[in-house]
Image 1: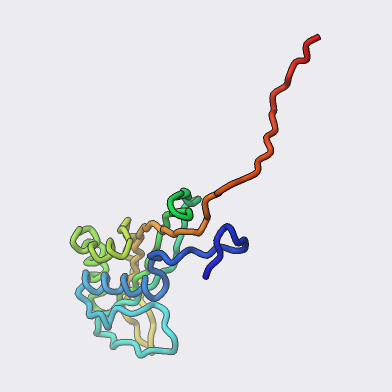
Image 2: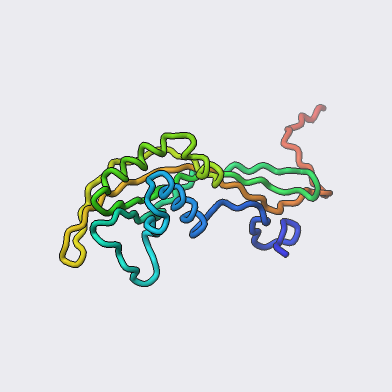
Length: 191
């Protein structure tokens, strides 16, 4: 059982619906990129993988994606909820940057389809269900890559999302206290 404010020590968040992180976040973004571009899900791959997976042939359109930056806002919002034993509600916003590298003869077109498709509300439903809101796409940058002594067409695109992170911490209600009151008033002594 985790600590609460009455026990002292570090406080971990209670088991609340946590935001998607790591592989779960990558999976939600992979589904969206594959769905919007029409590239097969098996060809929208994590940008960083263990081992050395075989790269598709130069004539195959595919994409490597990966979250490269998560920037929190300046500070969280914290509100005490006094019902029951009491808890603190914690919320903050984050900006998430997703690097997408499109490979193959249709790499530029696929980058453009993703950019334009992210403007369609129906395409954003699964991302919204995952707590992500689309903000912007950067420039599509041609970055040919030399692989096995052959140049492969590649176009990089950065996509920016925002989300709100919500957590609950066991900050309990104060049930009683023995206060010491100190007055800061200056009294005048009359003769």
